[in-house]
Length: 214
Image (cartoon, rainbow, N blue to C red):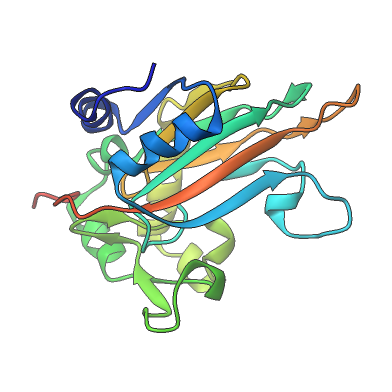
């Protein structure tokens, strides 16, 4: 059963994510439409001919996607035979553990935005922390930024925070607030003729949102 707009946004406001059975991909798209405008659709699956992380079966550390995307929705067409758990970290809880000077330093820290994560008119860097979101992926952080006390404190706080672990079944959807939730995955294996396939929607919303309140 597709969740109502009220139910969906209540879950996203409370915990930053929503998971449940939607049935087929058509129903999933109807759910995505409630969130806003889908800008990009990608297949997340293993393809040994390609080196991109999206086409691998490797584990991924918790991160956000494009800073110009508000929600991410995945439809599980086929789960993996082993592994592939989704990992979620609520950064709103992380920020509350940081010193104020570290928060200020992270707000002044710019992270590169890859070309695949932005349009030609959008800026090529974005603050790690801003009033409306967190933007972070450890593979985009240069060495001199990684050495900053504020960044080390942020990473340690992420490691110390309880991670949510989810295993999606076929016909289920996972939706996260990309402005607030880091997501990753465990490594996975395909076997027995079953290959993992998730369909990902990047969604832009017109709803007002505030991440940092002071």
